[in-house]
Length: 109
Image (cartoon, rainbow, N blue to C red; front, side, top):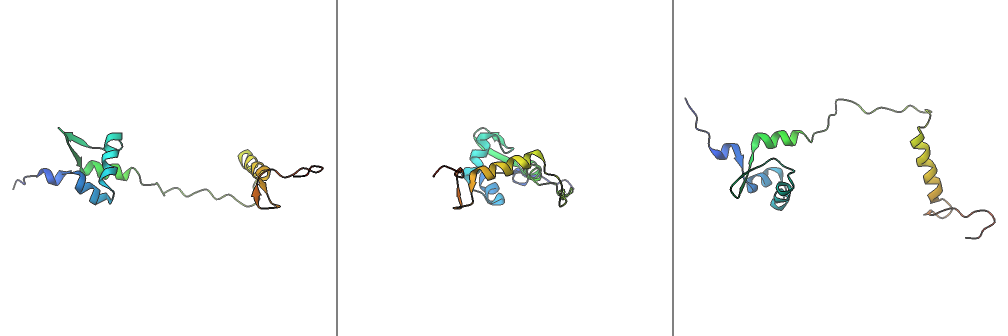
């Protein structure tokens, strides 16, 4: 038996895809104009191939197969951590809970 495949089985229009993705139509139009979403233009009509959209959506999934590294207690700080700590000390004024440089001895702030 040969099954006839209808265009509606393969392609979605803006209205259908916006319902499927639960986003505004205007967002889809913007993504199309910016080239952010795979689409087909037939004259002035915009269509989306369902399989292509499914692959596109899959590309946004995070790979959770590799666990985040656990940093053991007491490890030496990396140079970047030291810089961040120093910047926080320079900017955060614990006396009043405000940001700004601490007043220096011998000066009145």
